[in-house]
Image (cartoon, rainbow, N blue to C red; front, side, top):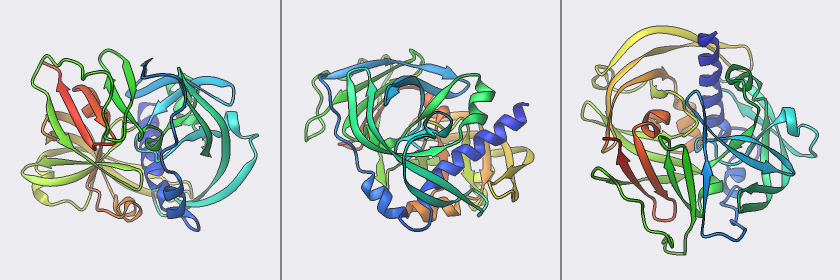
Length: 317
């Protein structure tokens, strides 16, 4: 059961990272998926979080439906569960490549309103997909994914240990009204890049500098299978497993433990999967060496200022 869930979750993570790589209107959609204007009367909002395994959930409302959404900076924009929004008027159908080179058709609908506490968005575009496998394995109703572009005009303060998220308004320079929270340890500051609604961080394994996609929806760390041998000296392989694409084609990926990866903050003993990330790199327009999510979130509180492109990390002592 656990292995079946792990395969489903891995396919889910990789598939939505590949959502930029499809025929027709692919890159145009990413460009059109610019950051929506945050509406509502607030300087900042504080949102309680819920854990479902290593997934981070929060309650929000879309077109009158209230329920849980996955915080997923690996998705470029809003994605909705077709189980609950399948009756919406489809404005477009996209043909996407899946993780193994097969294809999937994804419907697109328009969303009239989105509400998260006092924060509101109007007239959003959302992809529809089946999130049933994740719902069934975690036993929670999930309405969708909150993708990166929904936060690009805000500052995000995320503390998984306290299960709290704050979203702050920023001015044109990226400044907020409220000061940064105090850090009990020495905070670590580093820059990130955003390309095609993908958040990119620099990391290092065995003195090899790597580019990671920071995906808060990634329950496990993923490395490209094309990295240098020096990188894999830090990995202990435990087993291999088949990963099924939507077309029914399977490829095998390796699973193991990563001794250490350094983002300015060293992370140790991470569960890791080694997979082909070449299609993701093509979609992003930049070589992607890996994906990091929960393993970084679990090591401390962080402040992401999307205007300044800075991340301030407060490690857990």
